[in-house]
Image (tube, rainbow, N blue to C red; front, top):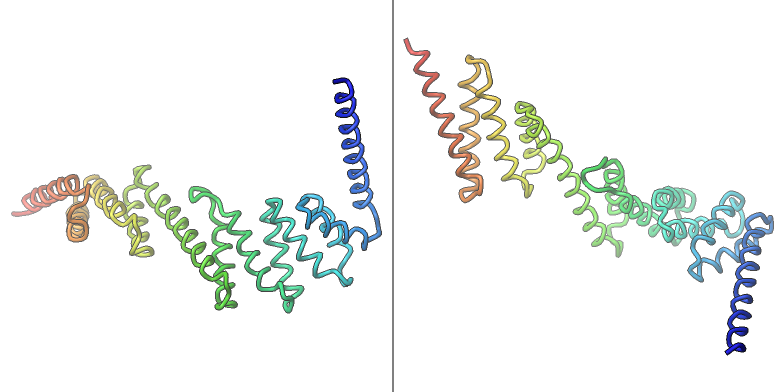
Length: 274
């Protein structure tokens, strides 16, 4: 029993010393000016899956390896190490830079794809700012135009569909926000614009419903000389809605609004008769 315990302690000590030695060697490599040794170690770490160490060494080499024999490999594997460690924003920049520095590299096409993909990975939820999403869409579109026969085209198209849907969600949320904050005139304008930009949107039914609701609220709170015209716009929007979504879950409520509009229009017309 005691022998087993001593053996376990001995093995743990050896492992700890090995780890310390390895760590010390790695720290020395980071500070070393022996770039060939640093490059070989970086490649070894990358191939062993120790991407954090590989990334740090490749980053160090990238600052000192321009014009040297392995400059292209350093740039390529630095970008790959960044991706493997989840640093997508920096990876996107690195791969884009790679395509400019090494346009004839056998990795050029893949680098262009990975630049766009890294930006896609940084694309946030639709409720947040979509600048990165738009950048990723632009990068993927440029990639598809430049490499129309690429094996990545099917997945590129899937990513584009996903991100365009996200932008559509964002635009709908913004337009609906005007209704939520009781800015009814702005809601009608924004939702109408949304439908113009996304005529096949799955939010079409909801958008038309809120156009009717917003239009009605805006109309009944208008000056009397503007009310009839605005109520008539609501009835026209309802007729389009009813023709498009005959079995809508909103039909009963919209029909009630339509009836109220008609009654209000009749009342206004009576008031203007001599």
